[in-house]
Image (cartoon, rainbow, N blue to C red; front, side):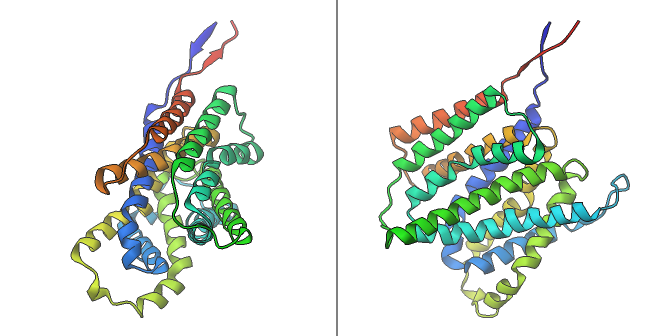
Length: 305
């Protein structure tokens, strides 16, 4: 006797919306990077998040006391997923081509699946394997279609840059896996607030150094509005949505939803920044979305009489 397993559509929607917001603020933050130094921008982002989530830090009555292991996981979640990911990605992209970086980033769903199998002992079914393959192929085709005007200075520098980008991929995958473990005992709001506070603490030394040397009066009014959106989206909305979805979805399957990041970034580029999509990029998006369909279709579970 077979039965369709219930479909956690709200969890799927939360994961997809989280990665879509990541892609949108990555694209829309380009003007901010041109104005603010990277570490100052990160410091302001975490600061906005800390103010917005101040009430989320309060421990709920039904939450068990934080153990030493949980505190360590919260620190690792912020250090790997917030701080180290940004550092590796920024420096890695500066040392390699955008095309190569995009191809390396297309491995995120596969790395998430491997780490989920190693650390969470999640079983990866054939459908999820196919979804991961579609996600990697789709993002890879999209990345290969992009052209870059900057050639790497030399092969060694490009190799180092690609390794740093792959380190960022591992950090992002670890963020997904550790987040899944944290949702077993903590609510999404508490996780979001605590890891944001750790991010603020980690980046504060460099953020203050740049703040003391920066002319804030030169920032246009519109950029402050964009900064507010960036801070809320990056530190509050995306993290809360992702942790909410992870409570109900295996990490290996949730990793497939990272395909929404480049898709939403490209759509923002087309709609707001005047960029164009080629037929190959549209095909790549179609393959990537096919992976999402495969990952979210209801599975048949066999029940014994």
